[in-house]
Length: 368
Ligand code: SF4
Image 1 (tube, rainbow, N blue to C red):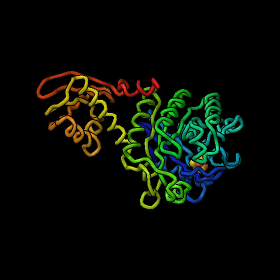
Image 2: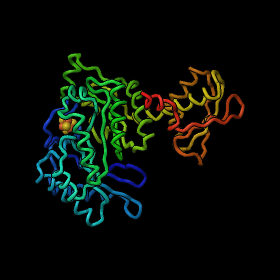
Image 3: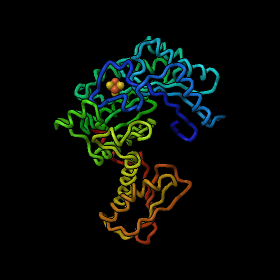
Image 4: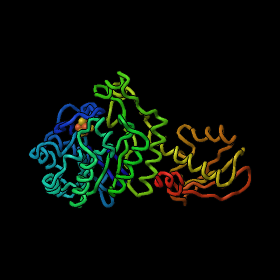
């Protein structure tokens, strides 16, 4: 069970590479899902019922069944119906509140949308990965950016929520291409986005390319730097970023499957910490502080760990760069998330504030 928010629960149903007509260089779907067999109607029903028993319900709680993995709408229609039927029954009974599927952009058509709609699907997540056609080609995706535009228009026209999954660090990719992808996706007004740094998994074409020196994965540092810009862009456009990075327990066996690439168990925290560091640095510049012994940062409770950085990384950064020995964080329960205040410098009270959306880094990106 995945918690998407305080009152939003996802029941994941993994459908391994059935129906996928391609072999993307980074994908070994069976490894990603950790499943070799495809569920049938009974298995899906039992799985969802089991989840529901352990899940809180009642007013204000939203529960959704999500079909992940593979390319759901590329499966033959009879099997799509078979897999969707148990979730649809629960939807009609009011036991769940929504159904989502993830699929490829070139596996969406009027007929497919009609099928999904008749089974109550209300969210379609498209595995876009990139809007740069060279990157898509080099990654063996087998579809183009035009397919993304077409599929997005279908999803919108059928009144469903539109989600995108994008990847950074693919073959032929660059930061510029990633920022371009994000701005193209934002223009399509999605409801949600997931951002995945590309990892080299065993048994994939990418693993061979890596072993032959034809592919260099991103470092964690580089991936964090790119993702922090993407996060700020999507946030400013008010797109819900439901995931940055892979979760070990849900997706892959890290011991055996990841050969290389920017994997970190707390990847999103690293990205959030990088953004918070930008905010503190921005405030120090605003206050014309070049060196200080102590500073006081005031933040909402949930953001304290980001402002201090993963394992105190930001505290160390400001110590090295500004000589700050005492990096005090004070909680203000009334502050909105994403707001950081500089409230003290070397014993002086000061008052400088910045929200994430105000960080000039986003303006610089959008100006391009
Ligand atoms: S389209 Fe999806 S399932 Fe098919 S190979 Fe690519 S990533 Fe894997």
